[in-house]
Image (cartoon, rainbow, N blue to C red; front, top):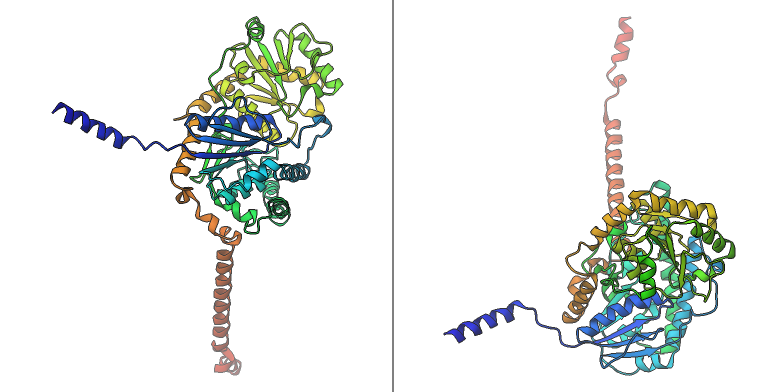
Length: 520
């Protein structure tokens, strides 16, 4: 009898637990020129590997380790070179889009022209899912069509409206700001006009010029006559993972297969290297962390801006930990420590860190939000301006213009963040919101990816908007029909009124006026 009960309980438990997904063949395609983007992608792919899946990663950066479940195909990084980011500043919207377009062309040529990549395309291998970054190299979508596998797109930033279009997700221009504009969710009339034009015009150019140009590159290297246009393939994206979270200040509507996983790269703080731990532990008045990220090098900081920064730092009671990519820092004060590479997320978790001087990159902003550290934002390009603008509006950051880095402006910004309590209070308040989730974003990304694999692309998640033409989606045909109906009704009413006016008896026809005259 006892055995019957035991087996019955086992049967119930087996039915209650979802069937474990068998090991899947995962293809990861990441052509990113920046290491931070690859760091996010590798974190995600490694999580799938730990679940027992076999991962083939095509990347421009060597991974931290390799084993039986990890196969790596290294390709050249087309964006690596000896250049100064501050000499390449792009501040206008059109220039930003051109920068992305040029980068996409370069990356597609480099990626598709690689012999190992071409061999992979013609290998006849079977993959259960293809994971890729959707922008700015949509040419990678050709591999998903070739292998007949579902596509999981991982956007390493908040994404654009045309990336959201891949899964039919709405982007209301009235309150969702363009990621390349320095706007917020509260826009006046002129800002809404600017935001609308910044969404519509690039989308048109993308369809008429950008994607056809990438189609030509794909045909040049892959020579596949059965390959549809990229504009058609991108509509087959099964899942779009966005590295964003509403805590950053821009809540927006989401279709079921567009999932926010902002902060998936953030882990439990690890022990710091001994020298950094000692430096921060000894900061009795607190410490300031200074890093311009991986793509923007602090060592490229112009001489006058560097000198101004050092004069301010030398007067601080706080210690300054500066990510500096050169071997030495001329004029380095005793309270400043430099390092070519620093464990940023773990440093921000130290209780003595009181402020973070940053370029405003999304990954850095997320790490500061998770750790509750206020910001001095110095945005350089791309989405950094929006990230800092939203952080400033939320009350845990002050913004400095990269062209106005002076001794006075740096002194003001640091004094504001270090001495006004509300900046740290707001940062810690948002940290609690950012961390209050039912599951870790990395686990959520893995769950939905496996969901897509289990359900053969999960077509039931796709929005019906993908089947509509642009004029149907915008209801222009309905508006036109209603307008036509209104005009017809107005014409009929006008015709009836005119006819009634013609048949109405005129007073003269009954001689009323003549009779009145005779009586006179």
